[in-house]
Each structure stands twice: as C-alpha cells, then as structure tokens.
Image 1: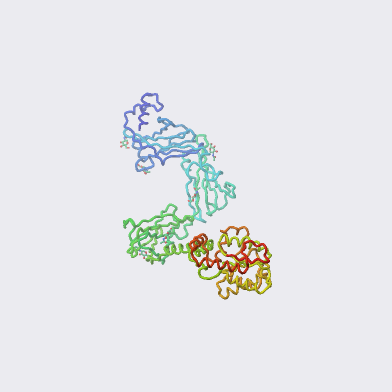
Image 2: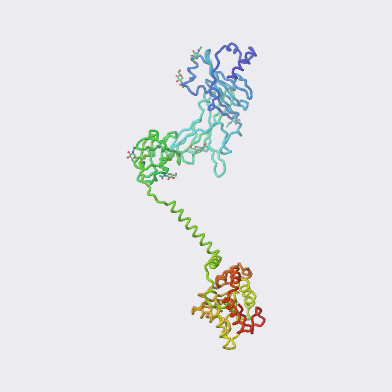
Length: 620
Ligand SMILES: *[C@@H]1O[C@H](CO)[C@@H](O)[C@H](O)[C@H]1NC(C)=O
Ligand SMILES: *[C@@H]1O[C@H](CO)[C@@H](O)[C@H](O)[C@H]1NC(C)=O
Ligand SMILES: *[C@@H]1O[C@H](CO)[C@@H](O)[C@H](O)[C@H]1NC(C)=O
Ligand SMILES: *[C@@H]1O[C@H](CO)[C@@H](O)[C@H](O)[C@H]1NC(C)=O
Ligand SMILES: *[C@@H]1O[C@H](CO)[C@@H](O)[C@H](O)[C@H]1NC(C)=O
Ligand SMILES: *[C@@H]1O[C@H](CO)[C@@H](O)[C@H](O)[C@H]1NC(C)=O
C-alpha cells in the first residue's frame, strides 16, 4: 500500500513527465485494495524461452472473472517492482513484453526480468492489485534428475497409462503458444533414459510409441516406457523464433479391464486377536485399492458398534492412516485403530474396518478375545536372570574353585592333628638319583616345611638292604597323613625304596588308615612307563602338575592344588595357637616324643642331605 502511495506521490512530483502519462488526473481515485503477494502464483521461466505471468486475481473466477470485469469497465495494468527499490514501474507493451487478456507474455524471457510483478484491476470507482514473483532461471540453475535431461523450468505434469493400453499425450501449454504464434507451432518429443550408465535420448519410436503430428501416441504401454518425456514447442511470432520445453512423468498403471473393487487384506476373515485389558491395543487394517483414477481418494476407516470415531467422540479411540505400498497405481493403505486403556467391556463392542472406492465397499469385523494372563515377560526375565546367575557361578567356580576350596577348608576344615596321632603331615616318595631329587629336596620340602608349616618326612635310601629298613619305611609311611609321590619315568622300579613306599601308601589308603596318596608330576611322564601300581592308583588319585617357572610362586595353581590335597593348616594363626599352647604339657610332650622317636631311630635330625646313602631325614 505504502509503495503505491509513494508511486503516486512520485508521479505527482514528477508532474506530467511520467512515462505513464495522464495518471495525475487519477490521483483523486479511491485507494487500491492490495491483496499482497500471491505465493502460489510464482512463476519460473527458463532464460531464452517464452513464458507468461497470469494475474492471480483471476485464479478465483467467482471473485474476479476477466470477461465480466471487462464489461464493468475495468482495465488491467501491469507494474514491475524493481529489485531493491520501492518503485512500481508501469510495464509498457513491446514485442517482447505483451499483454493478452489476464496474461503478461515474455517472448522470450531474459535474466533481467526476474523480480516482483503487480497486476492492478481498476475502473473509475474501484481498484484491486496483487503481486507475484517471476524467476528467470539459467539452464544450470535447473535441478535435473539426469544430466542429459534438458532443463525445464516448470514442474513435470503426470500421465498415467494402463499397461498394454494406449493414450495420446499433448505437450502442456501448446494451446497457449498456438494463440500467440503466427503460424502453426511445431513440437519435438523425446524420452531420456539412463541405460547401462549411458544417457540415451529417444526418439527412435516404433509401432508402440510414435509421434503423431504435435502429439506423442502410445499404442502399447509397457513398464519400460515409464519415465520423463520432454516436448519442445517451437513457434514463429513477428519474425522471431520462440520455444519452450515441458516434461511429462509417464507412469504405467493396471489397465481399467482388471477388477477395481477394494478389498481388506488384513486382518484375515476369521482371525481372532487377543487383547490385554488395561493396556494400549492396536488394531491393524490394510486395504487394497486398485487404481481407477490417479486422483481418486481411497477411503478406509474404523467403526465401533457401527459408529465412526467422529460420531463416537471417545478420547480413547484414535486412528492413523498411511500408505504402505504402491504398485502400478494400486495403493495399499493401512489404518491402525489405537485404543488407549482397553476395558473388558470393549470386548463386546463390534470393531469393523471398512474400505470403499467408486466401485465398491467391504467391511470386516475383528474378533477380540481376552488374553489369558501369562506372565511370559516376567517369567522370561526371572529365568534369564537365574540362568545368568548360574552361568556366573559356574564361571566363578571354574576360575576360582581352588581359592574357594581353600577358603572353605580354612573355615570349616578340621585339623587332622587333633583327630589322629600321626607324626608327619607329608611323606615324600620319589625316585632317587633322578632329576626330581633336586626338586624334592630344595623346592618341595623347603616350601612345605618353611612356608606352609608342614612336618615332612623323607626316607633317604636307594635300595633295600635289609628287613629293618623295610619295616622302618612302612612305619614312617604309616605315621604320615599324606604320601606325596613325585612321579618320574624311573619311579618305583622293581625293588626300589620308592616302590615300597608306594605300596605302603596304597595299602594304607585301602585299609582306611587315615593316609592319602597324592601324585605330583615334576615333568611330563608317559603313562605307559609307570609301574602297574601307579597306573592303577592314578585312577583314584589327584595328580598335581608342576608347571615350571609358573609354579614357583606360592600363589600359583600348583601350590594351591597341593594345599587342597594336604591337611588343613592355618598359616599365620598356627603360630599364635602354638604360642598359646606353649604351656600345654601334653603338646610339649607330644613334640618331644616325636623328636625322640626320630632321634632314636636315626640319631640325626638334619635338613641338609649330603649323603643320600645313609640319611633318614624325617623332622617334625
Ligand atoms: C465469467 O463471466 C462470464 C459472463 O459474465 C461467463 O460466461 C463465464 O463463464 C465466466 N467465467 C468463469 C470462469 O466463471
Ligand atoms: C467499477 O466496478 C464495480 C465492480 O467491481 C462496479 O460496481 C462499478 O459500477 C464500476 N464503476 C464504474 C464507474 O464503471
Ligand atoms: C530455444 O530458443 C533459444 C533462444 O532462441 C535457443 O537458445 C534454444 O536452443 C532453443 N531451444 C530448443 C530446444 O530449441
Ligand atoms: C513420476 O511419478 C512416479 C509415480 O507417480 C513417481 O514415483 C516418480 O518419482 C515421478 N518421477 C519424477 C521424475 O517426477
Ligand atoms: C498392529 O501392528 C503393530 C505394528 O505395526 C503391532 O505392534 C500390533 O501388535 C498389531 N496389532 C494387532 C492386533 O495385530
Ligand atoms: C461388521 O462386519 C461384519 C462382517 O465381518 C458385518 O456382518 C457387520 O454387519 C458389520 N457391522 C457394521 C456395523 O458394519
């Protein structure tokens, strides 16, 4: 409005010198009714092509009808608002810019034409105006699907052709050009397709598609003929050659000969759905709508007890519709009825899904049944957690079973020293003069005695020269709680000390003499090289393997496993107990006795084994 006033003011100040002369007399005219800028009337034209602006006042003929306004003495004026200025410049007709009824033609358009245009309808007593925008595009400003497509400033129109069917396509806007042309316009048609990454431009029409005069005729429509078709209209006007190009999106659809009744695909006819009262319930319905006309609106809706949701007016019910599939014009539409807080009495309601198009109607009731409460989720969760816990325990047990066992023993195990009258915790039996000897004397024995606090007995004799040795061996074994057998290839060869010890141990175990045999393997030994007694015993006995350097630490698996097999001994607390028992006569006597007995038999208490021939090395 302000701009118009300023224009008038400008014209007034300029006096009669304005290009649109004679306007000064109209200053007394009533103010013009301004409709603002019409957004939908915006026009794009390709640079160099011909195009037009159509005054949007006449887009609603019930309001403004061009024919009737002419008869009421109205005149249509065109103005142009210069870029960045408030000045409305009247447009003077030329051979390039011309008025034709409600249109302003640009033949051709130039890039300078871009801007806002105003059309004003006016008679002596009334005036209306409306603005619109014109954009003149350079070819490189046009968005194209494939680069070899020609640039088109106007959106493609759509055409639908039934498969195997025929149709005549006319170039859009051809009739408008024909009115402006001096002679008959000519049209060229082409179809652009990308084939094997190569852009191909038809026409090489065949007897299924042909150009027929200005039109393109389809005789037999195929799927492969779908896509964008382009037509360029050429015409002559006042000695100028003009053109414009339009595009048509051709889509194949099912022909009209196939049945067009709508149908309900889902739910199936006799399906009974289970619902849970108190929860959100979704009822799904999918309808198939065969194509009749491309713009036909398919209808799919739910009714509750015969009432549409609008009539029902219950906040708990709502429906949402969406297209789930599209096939050559046929549409598959889903409508989901959402029921908030489903009530038990809703079970008795009649839920119907209905579909409808121009040709028919179908309705189907969904059968609902109350869901028998199965705590499937809760049960599943509980079971899952239980299984997980069991798995965890299983893993923990497998990784830490030795530690757990030792812990258990340290809490609940009974100290065998209080229940038997044995002198030694461990009697070590091994093959003399072997690789294992060093291991037994320097490692096993040191750790067992010094670090773990066991009393260890090692009877050092290679052979059995006399009966007394045999008796002594048996007696020492019998007075030990464990017989620790260090298995080696030459262990327990016939007639050796070790064989005697092994037999004594196995017999002692068999007779229930509070003796247990433990097998320790220093180096891997072939099973078949074992003596028969050992092989038999292995079935029932634990075998603790020395793992080289890995086993040196007291915290290693080797020592843990060995401790599990050995009598319960609480390291650390042991000393305190012994301190306490310091005054206990009995204990002192016991210890004296055991020392005495050792002394009496060997006359020696020695930790160092310098002479394996002669040393009987049992110390408490
Ligand atoms: C405009 O009015 C004329 C007569 O006044 C009428 O014949 C014509 O159909 C009208 N046009 C439209 C588009 O309504
Ligand atoms: C101007 O147009 C209006 C209708 O738009 C009409 O009523 C009026 O009579 C016209 N005035 C003249 C002077 O023709
Ligand atoms: C249309 O006309 C313009 C200007 O004369 C020309 O540059 C262009 O190539 C023509 N387009 C076609 C498709 O003939
Ligand atoms: C042509 O129309 C079909 C279906 O109507 C659509 O899927 C396709 O995107 C359109 N193609 C172009 C280039 O507009
Ligand atoms: C309907 O479909 C939704 C998912 O799309 C599903 O969650 C729901 O359970 C379905 N309802 C029935 C009654 O089948
Ligand atoms: C609901 O559908 C059934 C068929 O499943 C039909 O017999 C019944 O008449 C329909 N009810 C309404 C109200 O349309």
